Length: 398
Image 1 (tube, rainbow, N blue to C red):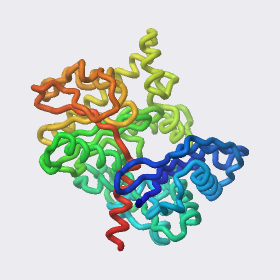
Image 2 (cartoon, rainbow, N blue to C red; image 1 turned 30 degrees about the vertical axis):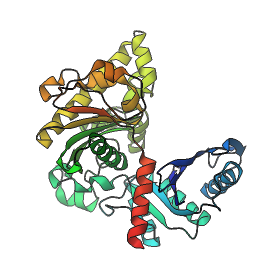
Image 3 (cartoon, rainbow, N blue to C red; image 1 turned 45 degrees about the vertical axis):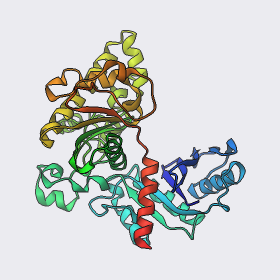
Image 4 (tube, rainbow, N blue to C red; image 1 turned 90 degrees about the horizontal axis):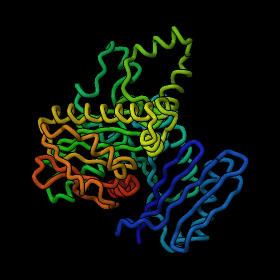
C-alpha cells in the first residue's frame, strides 16, 4: 500500500488525512487544535476507532508528535505502510508556483517571502511544513498551492487598473484561491457526465465559510471571484467580498480606522457576521425563518452576488454547459441553490425541485432533463486532490 499524508496547517491547528494512493480511500483523519495554548486537543479517527486527548501542544512540532502517537494508538500503522509523500496545502503561491512543488529550502524561502500577500495563512503553512519535515525527514514533501489552478487566468482577468509600475513593484494583481477545490470539482463533474473536460464550459461555485466562483473553460481557470487575497468576490461568513475601495478611505477619514482596524473589519467582522451577527449560513437562514429582516436581507445579498457572477461568467465563457455547486453550503443548502438560479432560465438553467431537495451526499444532477445547462452538486475533496498532485510531483521528480 502507498499512502500519502495530507496536511493543512493553521496558526493554531493542524488538520491531517492519510490517503491510500491506489484506492484513493481515506484511511485516517485527525485534527490537532489549540496549538500554543495551555491545553491542546487532538482527535484522531482510524481503523481502530476514534481517540481523543487533551495535552499541552506548545508548537507544530509537538502537534506532529501527538499525531504520530495517535496513529500508533488508533492506526493505521505507519511502520507497516510507510508514508510515501506528505502533501501540504499552501494558500498563496503568487505567480511563482503554478504546479505541485517538491519542498526545498528555496521553496520555503519563497513561501515565506509571499507571506505579505497571505499573512494569515502562509506563515502557518510554513510552520507546518517545517514541523512535518522533522517528523518525516526521509519522505518527500510537496507544496500544493491554492492559487496554482488560476495561473491560467488571462492578463485582462488578473489585472487591476491601477498604476502599472506600482502594481508590479508590490505584486498587486488577482491571484484567485480555492484552486485545488475548483480543479478537483471541475474534473469530477466532467468524469461524472462522461464528457471530455476539454469541451466543457463550467462555472464552479465553492460555497462555504469562504466562498468563490470560478469560470472553467476546457479545464482551465479563465476567471475567478477572489483576487489578490481571499477577500474579494462573493459574500462570505465573515468576509465582505466585493467592496468599493473608497469605502475604506471614507472609514479611515470619518471613523478614524487604521489599516489593522480595516483588515479586522473586512476579514473578521463583515460578510454574514457583519450583516446579521451570525457567521454560519444555517444560523442566518434560521433567523430569517423566524422573521429577522437583517437575516433575510443578508440572504438576498448573498443571492444577488451569486447571480451577478453566474451571469458575468456565462458571458465571459461565451455560453455555459455545466453549473456546479460544491463545499459545505453549496452541497447542503438546497434553498440557496434554488434561490441562486431562480430567474436564470434565460441562461438555460432549469432546476428540478425534487432533485434539488433530495437528501444525498453523492455527486448528482439537480437540473431538469431538458435544461440546456446541466446543474450538478459535486462534493469537493481537496485532500484527495492534494494527494494526487503530491504523487504527481514525486513521480515527476523521480
